[in-house]
Length: 194
Length: 250
Figure 1 (cartoon, rainbow over the protein chains, first blue to last red):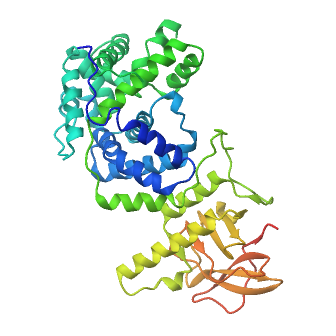
Figure 2 (tube, each protein chain N blue to C red):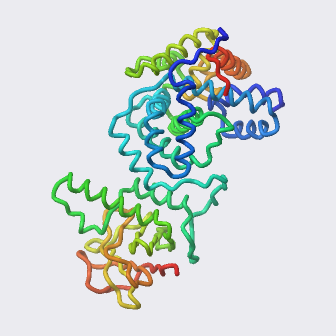
């Protein structure tokens, strides 16, 4: 499973986005509208996967998009692609929101957590999104069960690794390692080069 | 934590699964570890693919909301200069830095912007919403004006008020926070100081402790802004000593 099959928006749409972002950095609102159109469903998807709540997700997604506008001048294309930068930001903000509201009781229950993992069923008409999803799903299947659970809990539920350890009843060191080798396996399967 | 331990954190780091302290420690380590930085970048990109797979459709109305919001948000400088930690200008006038404008705007958006209160007695909810929106836009225009300047004053009881004035817009905005309610049957009234003659700039909403107010009327030759407590409905001329005065920055 080492072949790098690019489907959908990877990486063909990327040079465009990069270029658009460069224009956004100069205050081009038109360009920002195009960036918005390109990334909004992904940004909202990331945030909603983590937060679940519709209203909160939209609020955070909006904040992320405004932050993209605000911090576009700081984006450095030599440090990664535009879409990675934006989705990393989206995930980070969603996780921040989860942690700030961390009283949530449901989080200590493994079954409940796993039950709520990736929201793959959310309807979307975008073919490329579906293809992307299929590919990610296929690659997730190449992970060991523990790797997959650890990575999914951390990414889609926004758990810290000690929380993941707790949920999966595993030692901290094991979780650290599984998160890393799980992602490495995913990287190779997806053909990600950074 | 040993270096080997730190190196093993690339996965957790890419998934935002570290505590703040650990993240900082890891980033510090990465700064001097080419391999870690490279692996982190790759794993972050991998995590982004997990995000891409979760794409979902956004409400069409959100587009307009975001596109409108960004017109009032200033962009950061590319240099990456960290903003200072305090917003206060206290006693010293200077150009309002962009991050402070952003903060003001965020506050205005979160608190709901008001013009002077009595102008907001709109008949219908739609009309109210429309007016509120216009007011927000006008406030934003003042705050975002390239020549916006600000002064902050302390009010009693821990309240603060910042006056932002733009000569090019010829308008002024007052942003207050933690303001005590006026005594029953009284209101806060704003004044332009026209060389000692006080000109009413409207009333504040007595029901809000935090608000961004667009002062009524043009700034003109006014040299500052004052706030007094007046009987309900306001006064032609101030009938009490000012709670605060802001002199416009030169």
